[in-house]
Picture 1 (cartoon, one colour):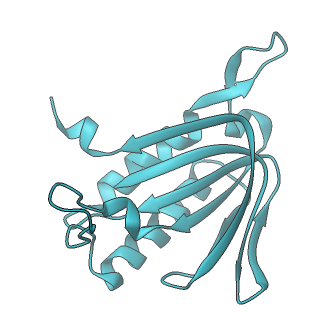
Picture 2: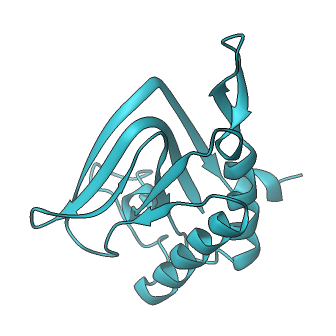
Picture 3: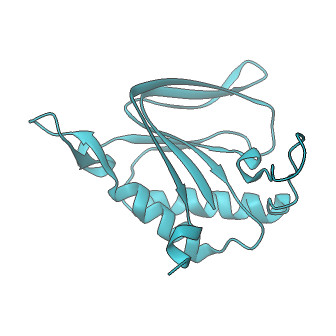
Length: 152
């Protein structure tokens, strides 16, 4: 599972001009689900995201988590994060999970964020052509890949 976590002042996602999800201070997360990803990986990723300390404390140091600040999260499905670009110039997406499984794990990841104390978790529309508006804060952008925790 791959995630691009962006610290934001606000973020929204729309489909055909209609806003489907919107958050204030917190994260915009682009989530790619790979073939073979599991619920355990979604749980680990949700826990890491919830505890990631990239919000400033009173001294201006990145020392607070999203739960510490009562932040919000917008999660957008992003199968293109699964692109394989080893050969040629046209990406291959054969490493991405099949749509039904990807959607199931995407929804599961969002439920785990809520269980980890995030009170507002908004989503886009799975497999839709979405327009995402992001007001980065910093900018602070962290890339996470659950494979790093399985490689000893």
